Length: 298
Image (cartoon, rainbow, N blue to C red; front, side, top):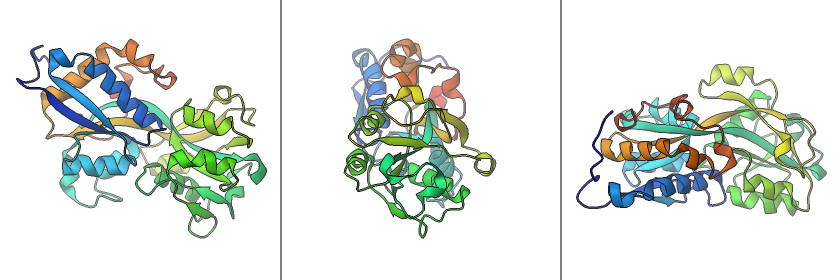
């Protein structure tokens, strides 16, 4: 697509990106995208604002309602919204659009050493955080547990704390384990691994049935070399999703074009903003999208 370099419009346009918890990678990613785009606001007339939110479900709902224009979401939640499943049973969501993909996110299970948990089966009877009800990771946790034959309603003490509370709760022995869907490495996982309580990552094995049943999941692993203080000695097997910047078809083609152009043309600069972005390229950022791509991003 060839659009002129002229200003976005006669007056500045402000768009909001819904992200995630302020301690998480979604908030940092929203800030990274805003930083790159806003560096040329005088030329483009477009300025982005990043908003901390509860997560993917909130972001999708608020893009649908028009309360925000953009959101960073998990690929599975976007797939469900576009295909009118799970929490989105109507067809209005067919107006949702992908802008580009970002980093891969591993469904991560982390447990305190004192809990004695070394595998998924040992989560039974334990205090386990599945994630906030408006987060995409809660459904990932439920899928992982169901694949293991674990009923989260009856077989464990399921909690729904927001992510930022998890490190303190684990270190104060108020939680035995937690599910977190996220990229690696992050300060969040560093905070859990470097506290007074020793922790270990728990592998999620035999994920073939999950990948077959849910087309938006991918097989992945967590390199143990990323965190020096945890108690694992081999890389941790799991599955995951992809984070996607999404919007609505109602957001202008010109605005989406500017965002895409600025990030792609400054990809080397963008990749330096966090280690999780190191393998990004314009080519792989348009792969694995779970909603139709916005015309401004083509």
